[in-house]
Length: 180
Image 1: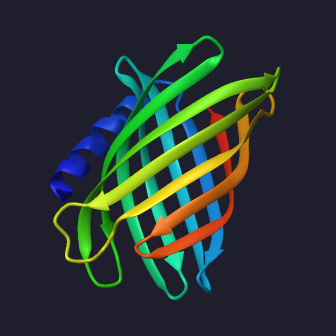
Image 2 (image 1 turned 60 degrees about the horizontal axis):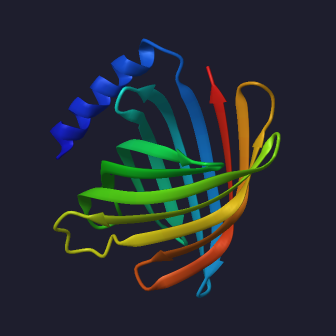
């Protein structure tokens, strides 16, 4: 799995070097069951003939335990009137406190404009490991506003409801994206 992710990452990096990619940073902070979840995701995305290809590095911390991983994903969508619907599939490799594992995630999003520079979005993501003895399963739903801040910058702020193993979290999310 590591070799597959490295090969895909190198292919993605060469595609990003040839065009104008979008860089993004996402930060989630949520609390629940007397625990705090913090997640930082940093990545780059590029439009291709297949959809939007992205590569990201993830660092997640719940209380004193943490996990770090990298993933490559593909997003594609369709516009139905004013609504944009997207689906995403990704593969990655993560390193946790007790075990390393390959993982996959699937997600969906709907976005609708509410003003000239503002959109409303709702999305859902499910992530789990391939054949791991540790419970890596997680889900995350969010809803919020997407602001166009200038010609090449977007800002998203929203509410998240997340589940990691048997713990539920509620909190906020912020994403900044910049097209190079």
